[in-house]
Length: 97
Image 1 (cartoon, one colour):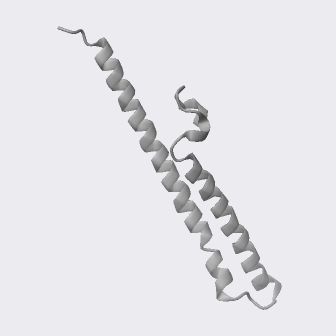
Image 2 (image 1 turned 90 degrees about the horizontal axis):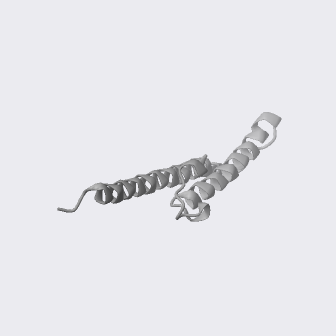
Image 3 (image 1 turned 180 degrees about the vertical axis):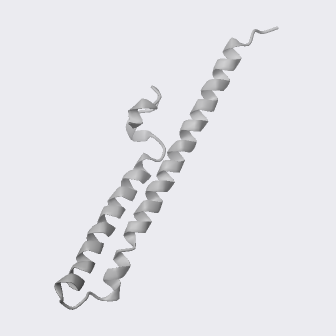
């Protein structure tokens, strides 16, 4: 859906915040896999992993925060571009006296 609001002068891979959203998704996925691996021994009746393994599970939250920051950055960039476009249109429509 990001192609609906793209401007012609900015290609998709250089939009503000896109890299943060992608990195956040990867970090979140790593944390989700770590959570599944860490919780599995509790259900299987084996010895639980050390505390460091549980700390890796916190990457889910970190990934979510990184992705949210990228989303907010993208929103701010789109609003900035819209204001600049509106200012450009207003100056083109206003007759010079």
